Structures are given as structure tokens and as C-alpha cells.
Figure 1 (cartoon, rainbow, N blue to C red):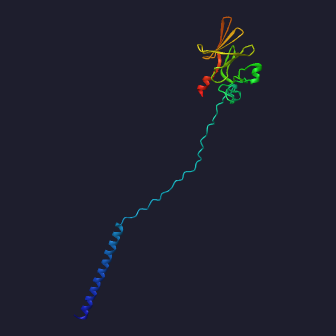
Figure 2 (figure 1 turned 60 degrees about the vertical axis):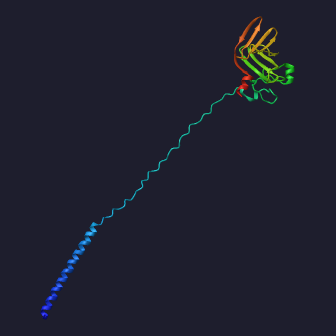
Figure 3 (figure 1 turned 180 degrees about the horizontal axis):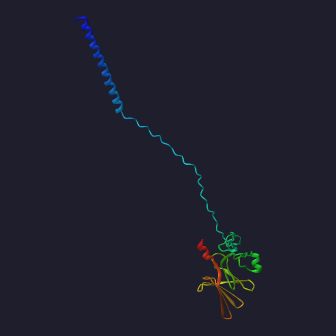
Length: 214
């Protein structure tokens, strides 16, 4: 082969290699673009936004005013008016404002509606239209007692008493007049000259009823 033919062959090979390299470049760049386009595009992560409500003042619950019931205390409910049945400073029935007498006062003027002296226990008491009555016992048993009566318009009477179990009544006599205090309803029966007048009770208490409530 002469030199001219060799140069021609080399030139042809150079052109072929150049075209081949360029063609390989084009194919390689196309595959790269295709792979890039096939890859999934990442979606942006949403950012959570916190909504802050405006602060509001919550009113405190209103408390309703409590009204204490008014209890009217009468003389009969006042502890300072209690008698002394057992000598201990206490009693089961109040004297309702009638102070008990002392032993000396009993000897001089008799018992009061508040009892006292040797008969300190108020066994029964009643207020009627005809007067007030108290049954005063030597003790709470009631086997020895006196009947104290304050008829309307007359002086206080301190009388020895008996118990009539048939009528459930305390009985006392004075100057031809019989006084009966019926325990079932507190009524006062006054018998004079064969005629009996009944005075209904507006308020009565018995020692037995009081002890049942304790």
C-alpha cells in the first residue's frame, strides 16, 4: 500500500470514529433525560398551621345566696326556762317562763306552775281557756305529785292530786270544786255543784310524750 492510500484509509477511520463517538453521546444523553423524567417528583410536605382562638374570659358561676330559716324561739323553747327534775339542772319539760320555786318558797307560798321545791318534775302541763295547769311530781315516776292550777281571775292553787286511771286524768279538789286534767287531750274539767264545765286545751305537754321523742 502506498502512502497516499494509507492517508485516505486513516482519514476515513477518523471520520467513522468521530461519527460513532457523537452518536454515542446523543444516545447516552437521551437515556439520562428519560430516566430523569421517569423518576417521581417529590411532593412538598404540608406544613400544619395551628389556629389560636382568641382568649375569652369565662364568667365564674354565680352562687345563689343561701337564706337560713328563721326559727322563732319562744319562752318554752328557751333552755334558761327549764326546771330541775332530778337535781341535775335539766328537765324534760320546760316551765314556759314560770320559774320553779325553792324549798323555802314552797313552804311559804306553795308551788308555782314551774313546780320546784320537793316536786321539781313537771309531769304534765296544759293551757286552757279556763286557766293553766301543771302536774308536779316528786320524781319522774309520778307516784307522788301535786296539781297546780291557775284559774282565770283567781289565785294560784297548789293541791294534792290523785290519778284516775279509768279516765286517764289527774284529779284535785278545792272548796267543793273538782278539777280534772285529762291527759289524752289536755282538757280541764271543772265540776261545781253537780255541773261540769269543759275547757279545751290550746297547748299541752306530757312527760311521757317528751321521753318518747328523745
